[in-house]
Length: 177
Image 1 (cartoon, rainbow, N blue to C red):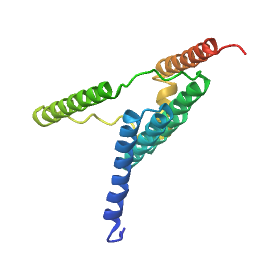
Image 2 (cartoon, helix red, strand yellow; image 1 turned 90 degrees about the horizontal axis):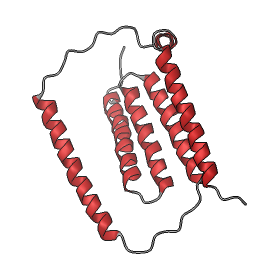
Image 3 (cartoon, one colour; image 1 turned 180 degrees about the vertical axis):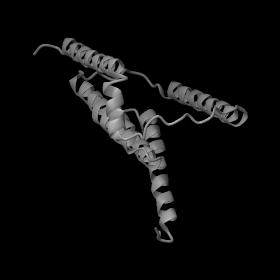
């Protein structure tokens, strides 16, 4: 199988776009003041992460990233924002406090990054796990419905309770009109 001479450069560029989307979306989600922009940043970050999963030869995990996080979590947050009543902004200037917390966050993130970097270079890594199946959608579905069926059902029950709780909280907070 022959490849074009510049295909590695193109693939590297596409991978860099996915990494930039992941990092940019995460920064947007963290540093924006508006919740809708934060949700858009979260969605962009999850789409970038799905692209990275696809480059790691895991298309099923990439699809689940988009379906679960972008399709369910981000849409649920948007519905929660739409159901919530608007609050009046608090009086006062919080710019100095925000800058202080931002600086503390950057210092903490740099410390965590340095610690994880040091641990990853100095620690011993375990051997790669033995592959049980081929990782196809059929094998994952068979495992979820046989070996891991109880965990699968418990997760769906937890998600159902979370959705019902969110609806109950949203309904009680609405003022009757």
